[in-house]
Length: 488
Ligand code: C2O
Ligand code: CU
Image (cartoon, rainbow, N blue to C red; front, side, top):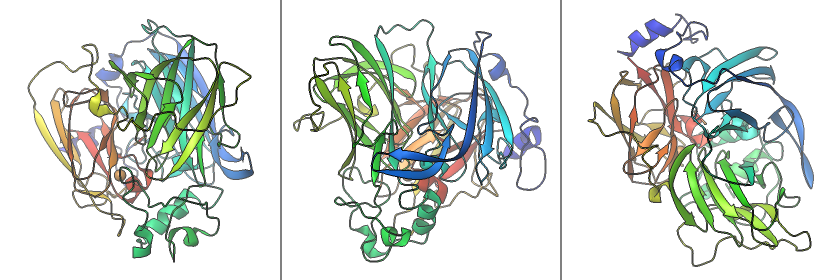
């Protein structure tokens, strides 16, 4: 069983289950296609002040910027990241979506000891699958403070021709303006009053309760409890910029642009669109899809979509509507300096169905080959807003006892995972270290499971280790909607 996995990989004793150096370099890691080159990056997690147009927010970030620096490597490069912790708290870096060696996955105490304040850690791994990925801590809700950044793995034989490659990081912003994510999580865990439920049910169900309208300022408890009970995110950002002073992208009319869109929000699904443009979706979560063209794309937290646009003549809004929250993040696309950007939606009112994973399929190069299923895993997503008791199979994940409720797999197996959402909310479900294929659909590492629906995914157990699987609403995850998937 999994105890064997621990015996193999673990150093014993206490809550620190592993040491980073004790995990063997697996055959899977040795088999990764390599260029022999190394992409080096320095990331310093620290306190910083972020300019949000009308105000300054004090928060935590990598290298003093939100999002953190874009890391670009070529498929097969080793990525060596020297991470220094200047935060007043433990931290790590998780490389979301990368199938890497387990001891570099950044999950304390399962794959490494947390990086203590004042110390540093060197991550080194091979990134052999091209695509759009991102990085963030795997400690509490730290990512929602702004500790996140893009990781782009370029294909040396890129088949898509384009003139520009733009990364767009969508984010919901709370910390430093009203309350820290840790305060939010603490309030949520106290349980919501009935008064707090008023804003629920909009859009796809939303994450934390929210209600449309004016921005509130005040104490955490006046935002989260008491009479209104609402959670307000005062800012929605594209590449760290609020609508008041938006990020601006410039190109020439007729140029083809690859957009790499990352939902780095902690609690928000975004409907993404570019006014006056059709989006041809080419990839999701790094992997190619059979192209689908639409007016908008829906991204749950942790999901990435790549899309190609052909730039029209003028100035256009880039809009990320916060689903169910009637707020939006906004940026500008310009190919003509004279025109002001309109602020309407990018998609037309008649476009009622954004592109989602449900309408995508995998081309042969990205599809799993056909074979029999060796193991079936059933995961029930449970809990609710009222008690904020998000869990898996009715149980909240316990970081001090992470193997309790773990799922075992064995190297070489074809695994089918059925994720049954027994809750009234949707959850973007993520598996570390692997990409799965939706039943008849695309390859992904994070996929939305709708309320009271099931999602069936397949993956090949080809990357031994202990891997987290969890909801990527960071508040749901941290309140317990997580489990370990471990090789026995
Ligand atoms: Cu971005 Cu455990 O995930
Ligand atoms: Cu969730």
